[in-house]
Length: 154
Image (cartoon, rainbow, N blue to C red; front, side):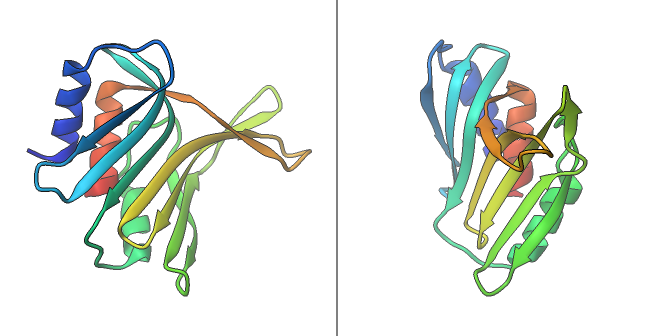
């Protein structure tokens, strides 16, 4: 079973929670693991604070992984684009492009890749005027959440 299918199954089997909690799923093959901090969750949706995917074995090119994530991720509010690849540090940054603008604020997803063994996904709110940003929770249907996990781990 793929990690996305395992996440989908675990979300449906695990009781809903009305407060912040950790939700962890290990893939069957032991390759990728999902670490999710949720503000709350019900049988249809998850309010995500942050989501991390990690695996022990790392191989491949972080730039290629970032590009694949940007091209293949769908179902989010915005499309994703590779913003930066730092070859010497083996890191990449993928963000919404364009971000959502609403009431003078901008909202965007951000995925930070550490090599090919770690991805951290969060959402931020900021303004063009102040140049500051703050992390905010974001709502995904459980189906979209499982799909995004699959896209990140592909």
